[in-house]
Amino acid sequence: MDRRVEVPLDRPSRLADQLKGAIAAASGTQPLDAPPTSRVELLRDGEPLGTLELAGAQVRWTLAGGGAPRTGRPDDLLLQSLREELERRLSR
Image: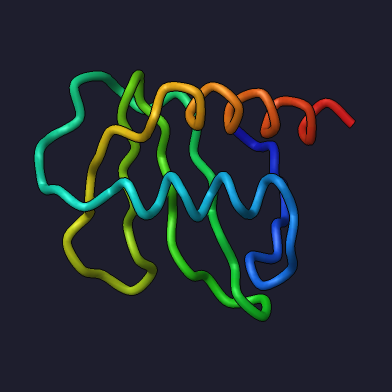
């Protein structure tokens, strides 16, 4: 998976809002039910902020530099629109 999208989370955009929503949903510690199908590495000011993985109906958020990963189940519509927006950005 060598495709990359840069998304400044501090600037308003649809994708930034979707990513923030998915990260907010990752509040638990349960394991993923499926292997990740997408991985988004987020940067802040060019430095790694963390990694968001999409796996079936779940997401896993891992802060850069360590810490326990957090998992959750975002709203189905949010997850679907996030996947669609990522694919749209990657197909440019």
